[in-house]
Amino acid sequence: MPTISKANDHQTVITTFEMTPATCQDLLEELEDAYEGFISKQPGFIGAGLHVNDAQTRIANYSQWERREDFQAMLRSAEMRERNRRINELCRSFEPVMYDVVASFK
Image (cartoon, rainbow, N blue to C red; front, side, top):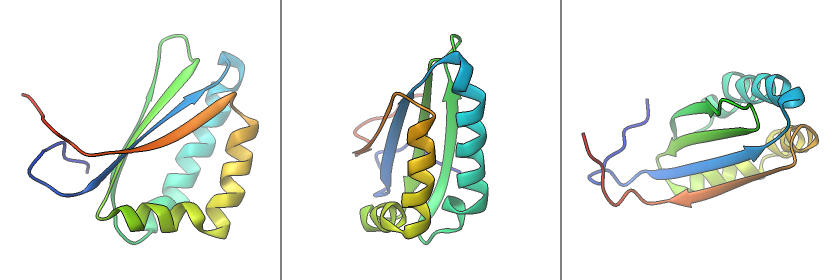
């Protein structure tokens, strides 16, 4: 399970996807399958969450990894490159960005 805390040194990745309402459910299913069948089993994976806006035109994905290199290795794998080609067909754009947590509030 992801923990948002400045105290940890995990790699945080936030990916945003832009799509139409017509492809939102298909994209969600593709992402859920990727996490359940592959991503969650990769070395260094901690956890992730998927979020959908009300209009079903954007998905935000929050994931955490032990190290930056773990996330990069997963992205470069043959299986994830193939999955990303399918994901790309279902959305206008997607962009994974690596972040460091600088503050969290309760």
